Image (cartoon, rainbow, N blue to C red; front, side):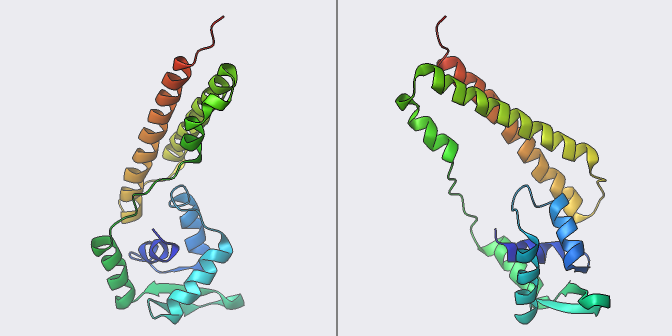
Length: 173
């Protein structure tokens, strides 16, 4: 996924300003594709210059509301249908697991217990999001809940795996 496609997708159902999109981004996509305010605003300018977005309204202090153009929708649809998603997953954590033999058994066990804790904290954060979001029937809400469920299940699996892995290295008393 790219930031450009994320922004195009956020504008499918409604127009919005950079501020509106940043807030929506923070409550929906930030857990899958984080972006800074400067990245969002910079990309909006590029998308408008490229004809994929139009400035639908201008307000005080240079506020611009963007809307998706037909070209923008075509680009988003092309990306969704024709471009194969990247399935390469790099994990710094799993790379470290391969080399736990360089640590003492106790250090390796501690590493895995910390991973279990991190996964548990991630799961709790996803549960918190699930409870705090005012879910609607719009595209972002429906598909956001589906993506959130992926995060919940993945974090639960990571927690279970880390517990199992730590048990494999339980330090004898």
